[in-house]
Image (tube, rainbow, N blue to C red; front, top):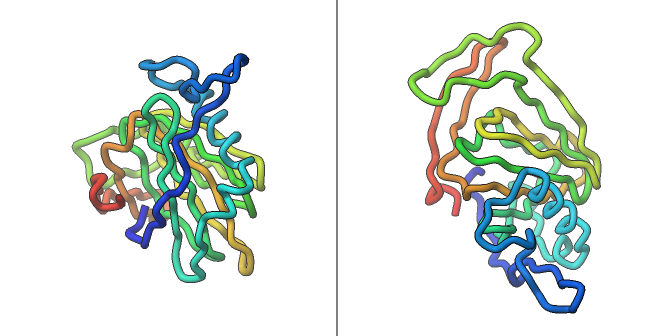
Length: 195
């Protein structure tokens, strides 16, 4: 994420109620790593929380976010996207994740190829690796380690809001530039760069 002002979360850690009314971790299995499906379920349930989504301050100039407690020790974020904003090409290193649009519509460009994780600065991509998907409100996806993508709010007038979850919590984000079929590693960010 780019360095934008963050909002202090007022939300308590997400828990779900057991059949007996008692609270338990959102993934139901303390001490286990959440699966991609569980992360997707978490972002879906969180996006349906209208009160939480409404609590996110929106800025016309840049993205805003609130950090949330995700299931099983995962890192989660509620993110506001002003019209015309995006992430640029990036990956989430060794983390798996999921994200879902709560309001508005986002567009994802992704690469359907696993890239080498280290030891390169420039790669030439082959034909046919580009994927594109539109994610209107209520739509999302899960992804595996080293997933390279960019996410955009292409609207010229409406904010979008999304929920993201990553496990393990993001150890780093690698940022790339792209020109045609050439992908170039530009920067590696660590958690202190965005928290």
